[in-house]
Amino acid sequence: MLLLSLVFLLTACANPTRQDFKAWQVAGEDPQQFLSLPLASGQVVVIGSGAIMDMGISLIPESYPPYLHVGILVIDDGSPYVYHITGVAGFNLTGLPPTDVIKGKVQRTPLGRFLRRYHHVAIYEPTGLDKERIAAYVRTQLREEAPFDPYFNYAEHEKLYCTEFIALALEAGGAERFELPPNRPNRSVSVVLDWLKIPDHGLLMPSDLVVASKRVALLSIRHTLTEIYLLNALKEELHRRFTCDQRLGNLFYWNGFKVRLRKPVDRFMDTGLALFPLDSEVDEREVRLAVRELADEMYGALPETAVLSRCEDIKQESVLAGQ
Image 1 (cartoon, rainbow, N blue to C red):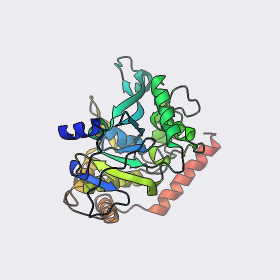
Image 2: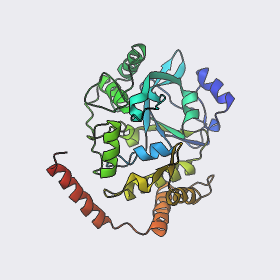
Image 3: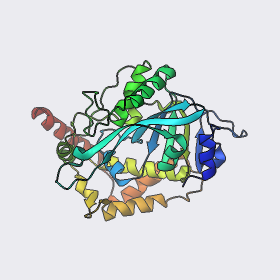
Image 4: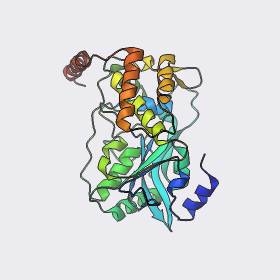
């Protein structure tokens, strides 16, 4: 958990330093220097998560999304806050889809609390945009209590989901309109989205809003850099193997209280997180290769050409069906 001293540092407007984190990478740093974080209003804050439900969401887009929530950093009265929007599910005893009972609005969360809440956090500099206008937009939405959109409908902006909110903020700062990337053509995913009343036209993901080379920092209070690399590589491999003909039930099940991983998937995650000592220094490419080899050993090599052929067949069927 977040150290109390770090909370005081963040809320007192002093920037945290590398000694407060288990993982830190700061763009352009000199290893001989003891650097603080270069925080500024208008920067984009994204989070990586190991939560099971978030793993399920990561299977929806055609391209693997390393981040699943996003906000805008704003320095208010000398202290750093993250402006973001999320929803909370209410009681549901009627059998309605959970999206029908989710409520929420724009929030302003102290950066220290935000860091404590998530597995890891990355901060990105927006490219060539007016950061003051970005900050002004999110402040306005907070003041107007913009509501959360549990149906993730990008076609209208009366209600907003997390990446939609930040996309509009970046557009207010001068960014071109963001287009929806496609969902993967998977029947199992489509059935679930239909039940949840979420349009199957694509979901805007946090990674669609940032440029990889513009990362300012990668941070975690509780997890080392090797843990972050391993978790990301494992989730990416699951995404790669969740082909167009797979079912969500092959990975997840409902135990009567919450969604759980199937035993083979749970074993893959546990074994993968033990591939390297968590306090070791490992190159990210080496981690991804080791995870790929583990998956091949546990499940067999994935026949790429056959997978692509099946996916193209399913895409063509969707086109013919007018989906």
